[in-house]
Length: 368
Image (cartoon, rainbow, N blue to C red; front, top):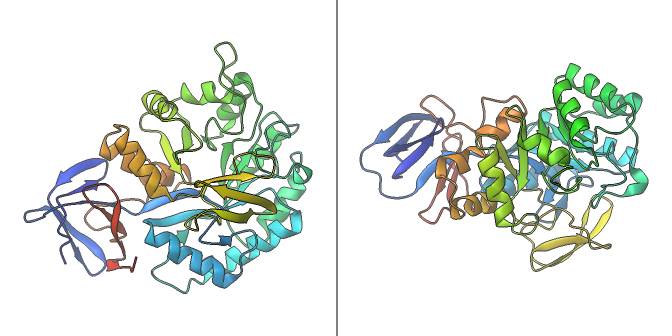
């Protein structure tokens, strides 16, 4: 089967011509006869709190399955279920539920999990964002261990490196092959550099919920932007960052930007009242805030951010890498977010306006 596309993003290059699929795999690229649109790898989203009315901290097994189906329709074929700071038992229960679903998936057309992203509770009380401050904790190896045996593979933990014993936590996570991301932090640049030198690899939603960049106090933002070994995650949803901020980051960190959606249960639901973990959020004009007015996750899927990058002038290949190969690299999964002959035909077709036109999972089109 040929897709009829004019080009495809193949291993970081734009290859003109059509794509052919055989037996669930990509057979050939660069074929004559394509008409319009661009084929890309399926998207990889490192920060999904929920979607379409489903909050992952409270989801049943059936709801986790349904969320995966809904995400796939937007082009996201791999994702990290993300759990914000919450009561310990609620987090453990969510880890167990997500783990059971990952071990025995029931729908071949659903997005697959990469492991859980624990965004908390080891965060700074100075920069909680929408996280409930009463549930924040200082780094605690025993508490961490209780999460890691709760029934789901943890692939990433966001933490504040300035907290007491954060270094021990980083060592423990790295020893288990878990990606360490810095975020929700008041760390200065020296503290951030020390954590990166220790092995932290990435930053959770750069600029948001961290010490602001200053000309003499650059903080985590400045440290991350000047290091070639750090991937910076950005939320490009029209609310979290100004266009100029996104472009400045791209120019400073080309090749190491991973877009994330940070989407919540409010995603795809319009304005109204929802929850993000135990936090009540209100969406007005597509922007989610908690009762104190803080930004509380996002409502737009990853495809929205991809289109925004392209419209800002980021080259198509680099924009696509920011939602495919780069986030996959962050969690050590070079086998996902790729499009090349021989690879599984898990891909997205963008129309001429760079919106998602169709999605294929193992060569089969899924219903939008």
